[in-house]
Image (tube, rainbow, N blue to C red; front, top):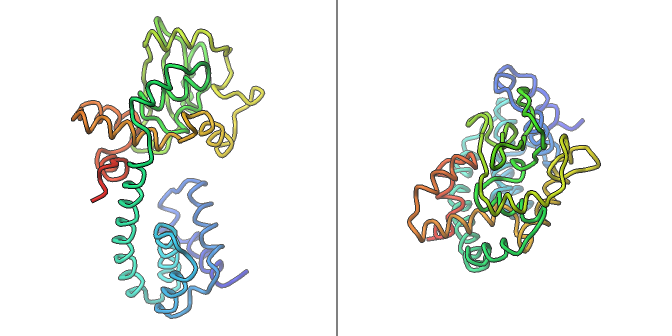
Length: 278
């Protein structure tokens, strides 16, 4: 075991870390980050900053690695003042990088009119997936629905259930679930329901069915992206929707999407607003 991992294991065992009540996925991500640091966190701070700059190009990746190094050095009672200063400098680099990406996306992505036209021509699972992304701003994980005649009270999964004139969506598993709690929405769009009735699904099946089983998150995300319009993915669809609503000054609908997506207005305006590139 290398020195970095010895310090990391000490961090894992600390009361401060345990009190954070982090999810297994988060702990796994922390572990992978610590394990993949290819140099000792005991180097001098200037050398650590040099190593980070040499080994990582993306400012977001630099930030993730830097944060881990600071955590580890704090655990090992080593100085972090120069690293913290560099982290503050990185924030500006990340902001500039994000704005550049948004500007490029604004030029690359299709219009809302194009999305809506493409949606009308779709059928089956492709129609359902794109409809949910366009109209509710959902993320991939949100739509990993299990179709049931009656929704159980266990609150463990995301459910689709028939109601008079439409469908009920109960979403328990999603990125910001701990903050926003269970989301409940209804679909009563006549055109959607007309296409839904042609979609063959039985009680207990998942919307994307893996021989009766639930897909892993990675497989599910991959399949969903392939089924989005032009394979652009849900994040880009959401950016197109937000751009269109901002052009129309329809802030009420943006607020509604903020709730259905489980994303704050501040985050939407900072990370999904394609005009936020100045």
